[in-house]
Amino acid sequence: MRPVANHPVEAGFILPGLPHPLLCPEDNPGWQKIRNAFNRVRAKIEEINPDLLLIYSTMWPSVIGHQIQSNPNPEWKHVDELFHNLGTIPYKFRVDADFANEYNKLSQKRGLHTRTVNYHGFPIDTGSVVVQKLVNPENKYKAVILSSNVYADRAETVVFAKAGVDALQEQNKKSVAIVVSSLSNRLHEKFIPANMDKIHSQKDEEWNRKMLELLGEGRLEDVAQLSRQIQREARVRKVTSFKPMWWLVSVMGAHNCYNGEVLEYQPIYGAGAGVIALTRAEHAARNLEFDEEDPEKFAGDRNVLSLSAESLGEMSSQSTVSHNPEDNEEDL
Image (cartoon, rainbow, N blue to C red):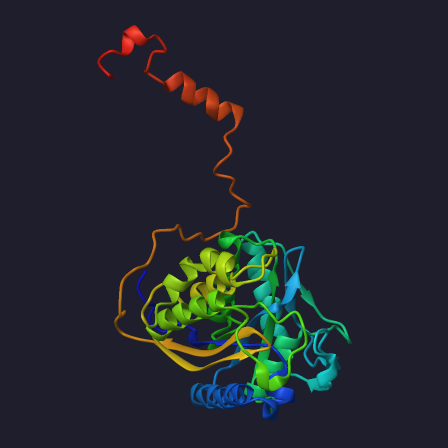
């Protein structure tokens, strides 16, 4: 797929969601570097001046379908469920409720099970809170926050992203897409002093470096196609996967024509925290996209390994090879 002119998503960012760069960056030089990189992302977003921030957070898991935050002014005090010792994060955001409802409607039109969320006190996830506080601290831009459905396969995730593009085009809005996710996501299982932080394992480090190499070359489609392998190698084995790359490449355009910039990479309590920017380029550095189908409408899970009795019957009737060895001598 080639880049689309006048695409409504003008840039994409991959940002970590753990609270340390927000609440205690001074405790570790690496956390402070991540904080500084967030400041650079903030400046890049201000240069673009988008109509809204489209945030897909892996730290907001949903089970039944996809959820879209539509409360115009969510306000609460958040405490991270793992690092509650770091303190409280009060927040008040501006959400583009009109866009959220449009996204919901067009997602359902494409066959997806989605719903909006709009009630006081809904627990917005740590990652969405941290990212907004660091790149949009004055609430200059409205945002829409999307959940990561833990059971969605690639086809469903791709279609969900395309519904977002539909909504942007319908409302004639330009956006930046933000994925809230670490690279490797294995945390230390035992308490460590802040100054002893490091990537959880050498294997995680190697995979993080490979992802950073590809993304630095603007090869977003290739990383998306490696998502399943990345999940097996460098992420906690659970129902959630490295699917945010499927969403990001589909909402931006499924190709490798990007300028990639790795703004920072450091460990945060064992996880690989990368701050990465992707903007559009005229030519791809490489052309290594895989030939996996590009769905336009979600039609349910596709169990391609299971054949119905009817299908088996048709295959049997169409077979021209005899089970009599004497009839198949030419085949031998």
